[in-house]
Figure 1 (cartoon, rainbow, N blue to C red):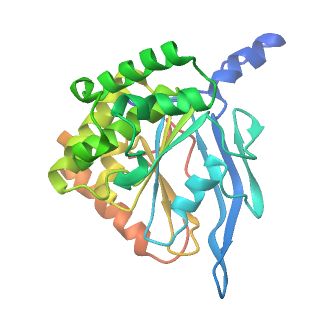
Figure 2: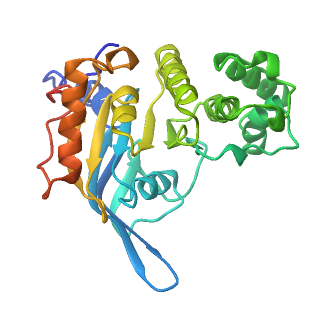
Figure 3: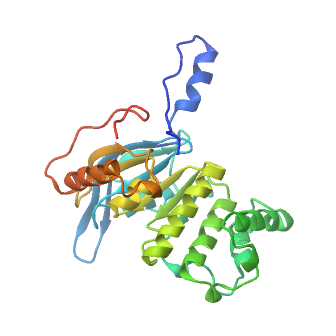
Length: 288
């Protein structure tokens, strides 16, 4: 898989400067974000002053141990959780609420209304948001279903599908909306090992075809290296940025290589070492 890089724009003057710089601005900018939530007895700080940027067509992974705030960060980007400190900007605009420009895929298999067919499930957000009329929604739904290789099951109901197939429907539903960012919260965590590997392979193939932007949460080092082009490594609770790792050269065929194993060991050491590493270089300039 080719590396994703974002070279600095050439020095030009006037209006051309803004035009040349625009493609190199981050799609998503998370700056100094602290997130908290209340339990019955405590106010919990999920993450503390987290910074990262996601660029167009990146596969950006949030990696960390359970309780480090990675899912909370995903919810905040989705507009479901407001930071107590810092800012989140999408396309230069503050994220204040959920919107169709960010679509979420969860790990639970019951995220599909069971009374709707596969096609109806994929059509639903298109119709509910007013983004498409019924005919256009059906066309978009069938195209998205075909992308995840479920055309034969378009009229099937969720209870007749395997766990992996349900996750494909959830991905198709999100992709049909053509969001600016696809938000994926450990979408393969509940699958068996073989199905999980197959889903990772299909997700990478889908990315090769469409080149969408993705923010992906996992606590698996191996999955992060396979699925991501960049990884943000978070410390144990409360989550802080420990490091940022460029892993664009890895895919499923790399898992047995020395380079892959060395990268996995390096990240493992980061996760469980004391202290926080300084921010890494911009995308395209980070060593593997």
